[in-house]
Image 1 (cartoon, rainbow, N blue to C red):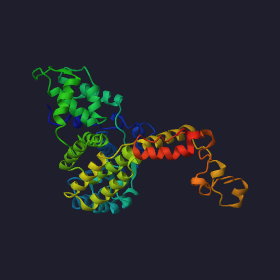
Image 2 (image 1 turned 180 degrees about the vertical axis):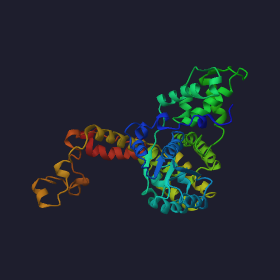
Image 3 (image 1 turned 135 degrees about the vertical axis):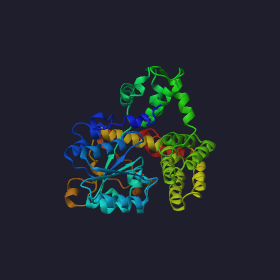
Image 4 (image 1 turned 45 degrees about the vertical axis):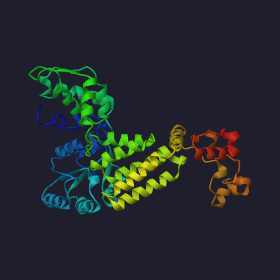
Length: 425
């Protein structure tokens, strides 16, 4: 196999060669327009691995004929940042690309502020994490945030065929893409992972290597390769989503053993302690919810605690919380309810608030019947007033269905006494 990885050999040099991210780089899009005008703001590129963050940064630097500096937040610190800023002062245009910028601490991020604000450098940060949480507000306010999407099936198929046609090494092989389902499923919208799997599949062809000799890429072959690679945890992204998925599914499935094992895999692999804790906060609400409201409290406290404590002791706190969440009754009723509500908002738009529950702070509003005939719940038996709270167009719509667990059965009983006729609880 060629020494340079396939993903690097096929890295696009222009926006026209880039596959995916049309919302940012297609004709008339905001980022393409900025590049064409030569006016690039400092930016944060936020998206999953292998969707083009580094490629876009390279294309921008090439298009602007700018001096291009790169740093990895994993291995670089304030010293390296300051050295690049000092060198960039003598350059007409300088772009600093920082991969995994979410791993920079506050001091490291603060070192960038002055240079970004004065225009000494144009910062392009890449992150797989929500920048609202991981990039401090001072730096974030000086940057545009662009969200990159996972590549879809059409994009991935195009990449596969382009690789076989364009790559000089692969062109020497007789490669038949007999099946692609495993390649698409395992890559999960990650072009780098897709290329790695294709390259490994070619190296595992049963026939002897040689000019013009190749074989078939099948789902079975790709699955065999994937199983061999899954034994390792790559904190840079390769197995990041697979392991966190296994962890969440173990907790969701009420298996404390699976939860602790996959937690250990993440810890041993050097996963960010805050990332693990934040996923448990989301899980506590999405998959446990009102079946055990204390789960969200414990998960939130866990996030705060590990932020203060850090590794190695944080492993104990994470394990305690993971076991508690795995042992909690499960409900996704709140998750489903807000999903239904958002779908209704998108379907019907901004429906007017019923007059009787509008706010009426002025005389004019009162004259317009704002708040008229509103029933104050505390003035009625059991603090309940039978009145409509939804807009007229969707009145009587039931969005929340309590889960089948002890706590939500109590909620069901509570609402059945009040809303049986209206919602059928």
